[in-house]
Length: 82
Image (cartoon, rainbow, N blue to C red):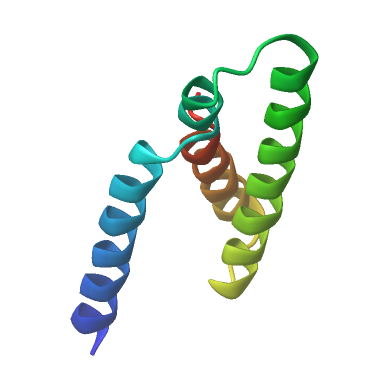
């Protein structure tokens, strides 16, 4: 049972990472050819959305402490495109 759960989590992480690489905030901003204040506003909103989504995902996975921080940091970085 543990192996089945571990395999499912690994598959979700790989799928999520593949999707995150193709649709980051930076890529979306470049695609929209944003600059100046529009770029800053877009990136701020996108980063806040990423923080909220990653925080919810960490809570759903029942992560806490260092594991939560590590997961959230990587998740936000992947979504923003840092």
